[in-house]
Length: 318
Image (tube, rainbow, N blue to C red):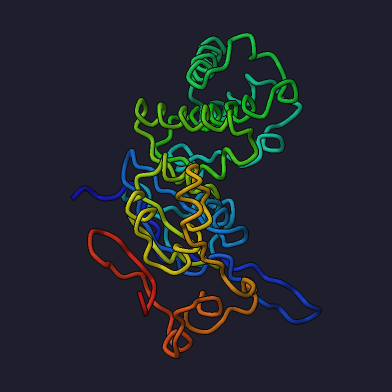
């Protein structure tokens, strides 16, 4: 087996919350581990506030991690080498409206990574590279002199994708890249991500809420709850045979276009509220809402274990 392209080991991201002289630690990400192979897409799903975006930002050191290790192609990412590693690892942000500088033209937005890493010999070569990147993401050459506010949401996201591709990275964190777009535009952007992956061999961490979108684009899916990954499996297997109680509940909420099947399906509704990351429950973080919870769940936190066929689940009772 080839070594994974990206390896995340026991990643932790705690944020200090000050209350007078007292400091509490909000555990946004609490011991996350996973691997992504070259040219592979790993989907990362979970409800709002579970830590998905924080995982992506901590991997690229947009947030300085509290603990853990991130390795790209055998090289550990550290404070000292992150500038060079940003050539290899890029990010497409969720909001195409706020992630682009309104004072810069499209050519300068896309060309900025080329400037930072000195990837051209002269202005003519820079211009040529920018036009080629625009063509790859479906933008016209005459868009180069315009500003971001002159474009629709879908076009702005294409600008963000072209900017990420400018340094020819091996890995891109896609932070809910279609959630702010209309459904018809979502399909176009998703298809473009797949075409770019087939053409360039880039790997993705695809963060999203929409399980149907994630299943379509991902080879494997990781389910996250309250700062921890509770299940990882092949995309089709996880969607058809989820084993963790939280994954089962998430998937039971996915709309089905066939009304007959939808009527027969049982919705698994979780009781109670999501615990605060400031005051995490002992043992399993999901036990306060789990219908299978036992005394052991309160005493000891389950680790991800292989249930066969590379299907990993963190649960004592499933």
